[in-house]
Structures are given as C-alpha cells and as structure tokens.
Amino acid sequence: MTPHDFTAALERLAPGIYRDGLRPAQRHVLDTFAAEHSGTADLAIGLPTGEGKTLIGLLLADWALDQGMSVAYLTGTKQLAEQVQRQAAPLADLPVHLFYGGHYPGAELLACNEARAVAVMNYWVYFNSNPKVAPADLLILDDAHLAEQPLSDLFTLRVTRSAGGGLELYENLCDLVLQSASAVYPTLKAMRDGSAPRSSPPELVAFHDWAAIAGSAAELISRSGYLQNSTDARIVWTQLEPHLTRCGILIGPARPRSRSGPTIRRRSTCPGTPAPGSGSICRRPSASRVTFSAAWAPGRS
Image (cartoon, rainbow, N blue to C red):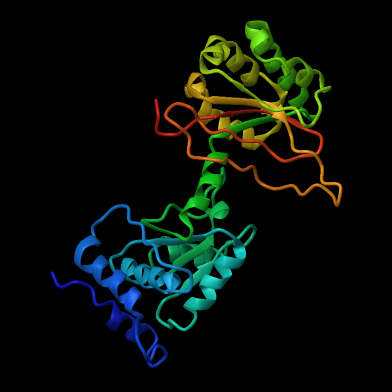
C-alpha cells in the first residue's frame, strides 16, 4: 500500500496557505510515520519548541479520520486547547471542536464520536470520573507527561479533616495505624489530634504495616459518611477497594498557607510514576486540612 502523502494532505486542507510546505523536521516525522509507524499502537514524537508539533498532530488527526478513527487531541490547559483550535482554523477541511467544563454541544460531540471531527480539550476534560467525551480511537497527547496528574486522581482516595465524615474517617484510619505500629510513626498521633505543626513531614505507611490493617480499613471506608457524601470518593473507591493491600498510603500535613495571599485550590500533584505495587504519593495543597491518601497503580495486581 502506498504510504500516506502528508505534503499533499496539507495542500488539500489549506490550499495556498503553507506556500513553503512542511518544514524539514515535520516532513521527516510524517514521512517516517507513513512509511514505518502507521500501525504502531503507541508512538512518541519529540521536537524542539517552535518546530511545529501542533501541525504534525493535526495532520495525523486528519489521517486518522480518513481511516474512520475517532480522534481526541489533549493539552495541558484550556488555553492550549484553544490554541490548537486556532491553529486548525486554516485547515478548512478539518473540523475541530473544543470541549471544556460545561461546554459539550450535542451535535459536536456526535460528530467527534462518529469520526467526522477532531475533539480538542485539556486532560481533565477527558480523564475524570464522569467524562462527557467518549473514548477516542486515537489520542494525541500534547506534553504527554501532564496526563499523569488527572489519571492519578482517578486512582487516589484522599480523606481530609473536614465536615461530611472526613474528620471521623481520618481519625479512625489513623487510629488503625497507631494501634498496629505506633512506634514506627512518631508524628502520627499529633497529626491525628490536629496538633502537628504544618511543617511536620508526612508519614508514608510501610506496605507490610498497611497490609496488616487493610481489611479493617476497608470496612471503615465502606461504611463511612465521607464515602456517602462524596460522589468522586465513591467512584475512586470502587477502583481501589479490590487492590487496597497494594496501595501506597501517605498521611501528612498540607503545605502552609502563603503569607502573601490566599490559598489557591488546585488539583493534587503526584511527583512520579508509581513503582510496581506502590501506587503514587499525593497530597492536596491546603491551609488547614491534613490528608490520608491511598493510591493504586492501575494495571497491577
């Protein structure tokens, strides 16, 4: 079969606009894809900033639509998603629809699901506990490392010292650890009582200590008011419960409030890819809440 001609595709999509055609690096990447990787399941493309990766992604999206595949183009922020949509505007024959929180026009969703248009959005719009966009046949990930954060959120249960059952569950879980191995975790009692300084280091519960109490912890979590009052927590719990003995557990104080301004609520960050069986270690920045975090690395038994 003759490899796809991306130079011709660009001229078809934007006649007369790209007078110089593809840049050498773009042409090399796309020609190599066409000749060697059109059937490759997972592929990474690395180019310096400003070398035209977005156009490469859009031309690959056009190729995928021609093959009858639905396409989702994911970025780190809504602003970057809007930028992709703007860069796609000159490609007249490539419809691109932008989705974001609260903006999911039915006709545009249908067009993307039926492989008649490209869906563009940030990672959190695509990866969440209640996604509106259907899974795509082809995912194009801009700055792929940024996908780790929203993906880890789907497999991380955070229990905060808060109303709605959080405080009670937090204290009960801390009590389980203290009853089993109090000498190993010297600051945990103060954290449990809410008297630990904000600068106290978090306690990472050893896997063998957690395995010894995981059954009791599962009972506490399953019947807790915290789970009943949080839809997101219930969804995550269905993923974690069968693998609870394999979860990584972190208990610790949050980062102190900045003296220069109010606390900024943002999504939790995870500092690395989980090791086998370890889960990830996450915490939510907050001025007053201490978190008990359990995370599981999906795909591991």
